[in-house]
Length: 185
Image (cartoon, rainbow, N blue to C red):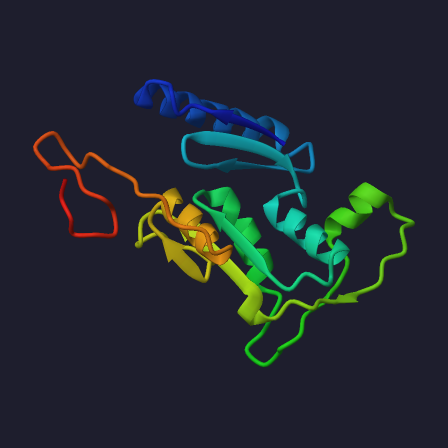
C-alpha cells in the first residue's frame, strides 16, 4: 500500500488536496484495478483489496495457531480492519476458533498453495482489541483507552514493570500534575 500523510500541512490545504486526490483515484484508478482507497486521520491510503491490517492479523494467527494472547491497538480507520478480523473469530456460542486460510495466503503463496483450516489456541479471554482516542468513536474494538500513553502503561503492567511518571502541561494557567493522581506539582 501507499499512504500519503498530510498532518504537517496547512489543515485547509491538506484537506482540499486529499479530497481532490480521492476524487481522482476513485473515478480513474479504482474502477480499473483491484484496489481500495481509505481516508484516515490526515492521511489517504491506497491499498490492494484483501491486503490490510485485518488480513495481516489473520495471516499471523493462521501461521501461529498456538498463540494464546493477542493485543491489538489502533487509533485510525485502517485499524478497524484489524478489529473486524479479531471480532469475527468467536461467536456468542463458540469457545474455540477454527480459522480458514486468509485471503492473503493465495496472494502470497500462490493459487496452488494447499491450505487447511487451523484450530487456534487463542480464547476470547486472551484477545484484546483496543481503540485509542475519543470515547465517542465508533469502533469494533472491545476495549477503549484515551491515549497512547495508556496503551504503553497497560503493556508495562502486563510484564510487571513500573508505570513511568509523566508530567503534562494542561494549559498555560493550569498547574502541572501527574496523570492518574490528584497531586499537583
